[in-house]
Amino acid sequence: MPLPTPYEGKVLPEWIDHNGHMNLAYYVLAFDLATDKFFDYFGLNQSYRDATGCSTFSGDIHVYYKREL
Image: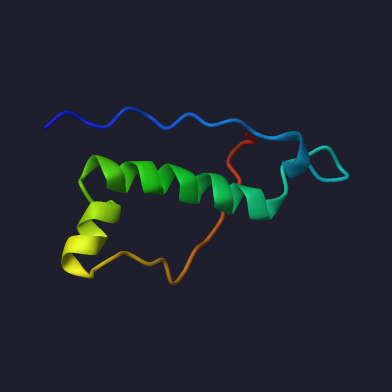
């Protein structure tokens, strides 16, 4: 199975804080949006949830800044 294509999104102006940097909350949102696309690739989408009653959930998250988006 080939790997899914990398997620590409857009940093919206309202995601930028008063220092001109992307706000922490939006890093988490961007990662969450990319994760949704990743799960879709493997069939873990709304159809799967409807058919099985199962889903995914993130209970812990750590944000490390390696570079800005």
